[in-house]
Image (tube, rainbow, N blue to C red; front, side, top):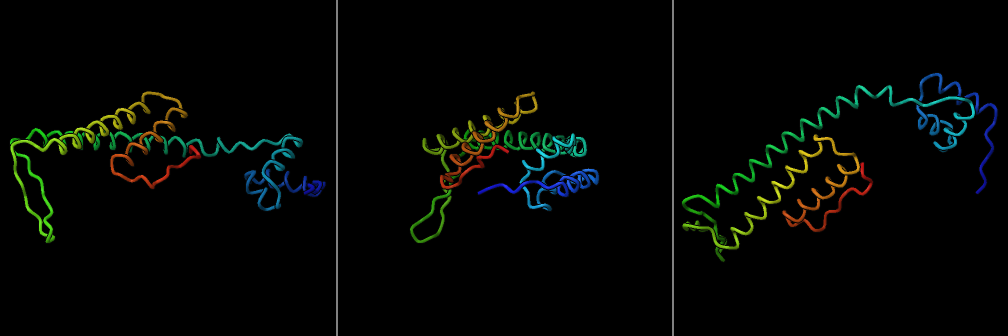
Length: 173
């Protein structure tokens, strides 16, 4: 497929739209051209798309909002870990058993069965690991490390809740 040449009229339109504050992608869609073509022509015309300056304040607010959400999530993860540990260490362990006829029966023992204790231990470890990784984000790790951590967190949550069919976001963003 051959590229059609960019006309002088199109160059003028790119210049006009740029002056009007339109983004590269908006211009590309309006002119049925690729964003890379618009960028190339803008470079030739000495034009720069500085969208970062327009959205800097909104980006900063979003980052603060995400930091607060992370802090809240860390607190929730610690509460879940503590609740699991409290349940294991309680004077009486209560579990519910499903009977063949569909009814349930509460069983109280001094200690949890080994399998239950193992599951609680795994959940506690997962909660604490996730909380620590989230806290690392605000300690100044790079964006690449953050994306890696989020992927690890998603995998850990899928493992913890047995959702093997779920697939994570692979675009990193």
